[in-house]
Image (cartoon, rainbow, N blue to C red):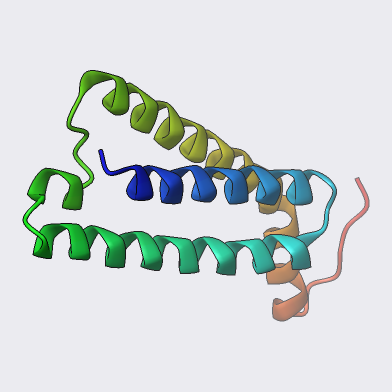
Amino acid sequence: MDPQLLSYYEAIERASADMLNAARDGKWDEVLKLEGACVLLISQLKHAAQQSEDSGDESAAQGLPTNPDAAKVKSRIMQRILVNDAEIRHLAEPWLQDLDDALAGRRPTLH
């Protein structure tokens, strides 16, 4: 795998870990800011992959590792990103429900 592409995956992973930490702290504005950074990194990754494809390295352009070690690294990164995303979503559920209730004009209930 092209080292540049791998560096994008690593940067996305770091941003997702930062998002998770912000979500754990209840800093939802920070989560949104970091989500924007992830979107930008993903866009840059796609652009870099397209450039690799245009230069003739189709396996790198598709994000396909060219050796087993790179495949393992990419797989571990992707798994951590997905785990982080799942936990962020879990933490966001009560906040999203409160927002939905507020927009619908429902009053919060005490438990």
